[in-house]
Length: 283
Image 1 (tube, one colour):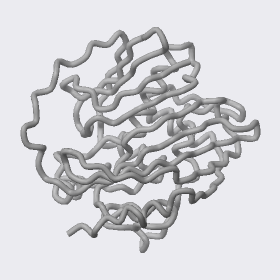
Image 2 (cartoon, rainbow, N blue to C red):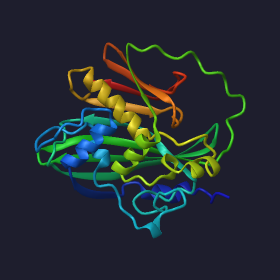
Image 3 (spheres, rainbow, N blue to C red):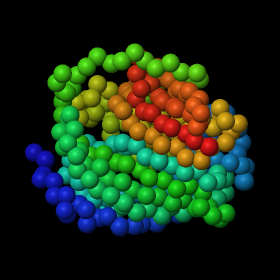
Image 4 (cartoon, rainbow, N blue to C red):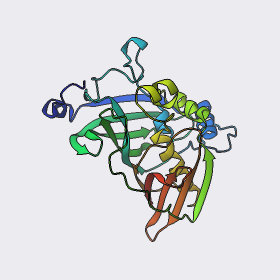
């Protein structure tokens, strides 16, 4: 049984901050390029890294004895100890000010901005918003807000689920396969021990999903890279994204874009063409 959720206690984490430093290495850039379906090349000092390389930098490291049953660190510490078993990225917003480069020493300053409890079709939801500022020797490179959602454990779809609408049409579209090796590589690059991305027994028998789950940040990274490619290699000044439903292993998925008067509407979609994450990019 899930422990009672004390929102007043959890909101005491608002304002807590932490800082971490790491170096953008050529090896990391090569690995991330390969995972984002880009030409690997031979990156050298001063070359621009993929736009979301900061998600691979200075990730928290805990001993095995401090990990929970889902592969995440046990609750508490910088993030509030939300007593709900499922956790995922719900969405966020990124401002790209300048690219990180191979050889940069990058510092990330993080702050808990908000903690809220809501009720959805799957039960109680707790949203934790974290603000990040990522800097390089040239100054602030990225400002970001990440929204993390914690959920109850449910084993069935909500009652009365409606048939999905027709898939949206895209002006630009790329297709790939959500291979388990792709998910493993991204987990390794981001030092993400969450079992839902690589442990099929855990994700199907404990959390009740039909298969391994595609990382939200990886979907967002692919969306951002497509947006930049369609805009002369320039990252959007602001990118806002939101997860809609899980994307699972072993199927074809697509990365899509439509141009708008203000920028682009982008989304990833499953094999049926239904959006799994949506994003808006503006320059």
